[in-house]
Image (cartoon, rainbow, N blue to C red; front, side, top):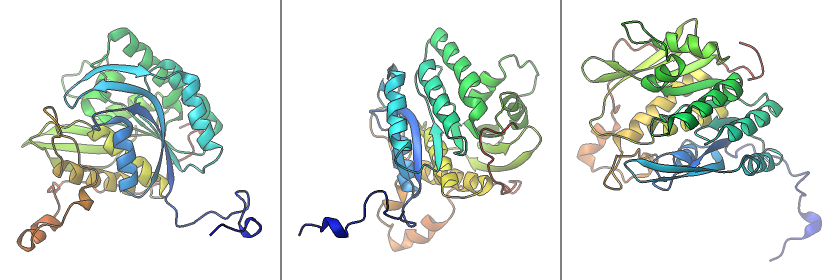
Length: 319
C-alpha cells in the first residue's frame, strides 16, 4: 500500500528518534582481511550499540599476517564523504585511525575545526611496516594538525613511546604519565596507553593525563598474536563516549569489551588471530560450562585502580 504523501512527515519536520543508536563518524582505511581498519570499526561500533558512519580514507593490500601496501584516497574524496554525512546526520563522536597521507590529515583537521564540540578519539597504530620518509611526513602532519584537536589519544606503550618520546634516554621505560606529558605538549589532554609490560605475563592499560594517572586495568596476556585489537579498542571507546558515558566508565567498558573479544578471537587464515567483535552473538555454551563462561574473562590484578569518571571538554579548548 502506498503512503499518503500529505500524511507523511517531511525530512525537515520529522522528529529525531530518541531510541536510535548514536552515530559515530570514523576515518580509517579499508582492510580486506577484516582484521583492522574500517572492518574492525564498523563491527565494533555496531556491537556496542552505535551506528557507524565510515569514511574510507584508503585501502590496504594485506592478509591476516602482514600489510603489503596501502593506497590512500584523494583528500577531496575523503572530505566530501565526511561533509556529506555531517551535514545530514548528528554525529556524537569521531574516531581517526590510519588515514594514509598528510593531505587526508589536513582535510580531517579542517573538518574537525568546523565541528569543535564533537569529541575526537585518535588511534595511533604501529606503522613500522611503512617506509621512513612517508612515515615521518605523516607523523609530522598528525602532530601538527590532528592531535591539537584530539580529546583522547589511544595507542600501545611501545608505539606511543617510540613516536612521542623518540629521544628518551632514561634507563627505565617511559611511564603512562611520561607519555601523557609528551601528548600534552601537543595539546592532547588524555591518553590511553595499552600493553604496558608487567611481571608474570600481565599487561597494564592506563588512562592518564600529564598531571596524574586516572586509572588502570591489568589483564593477563593471551598466548596468540592478534591483529586489530587497537582499532577495536579505540572504536569501542569512541562509541561509548558518543553514548554519553564519561571517559572513565567508557574506558573501563571498552577495555572489558576488548578482553572478551580477544578471549573469543579466531584465526581466519594462516596469519594472526583477530578479535571476535560479535562474541555475544555466539551460541550459549552447554549447561555445565555456562557458569564458567559467565565469569570474568581475565582476572583483574588486586592493585588495579578504578578509572574515575569525568567528562570530555570540546576539542577547541586549550588544555
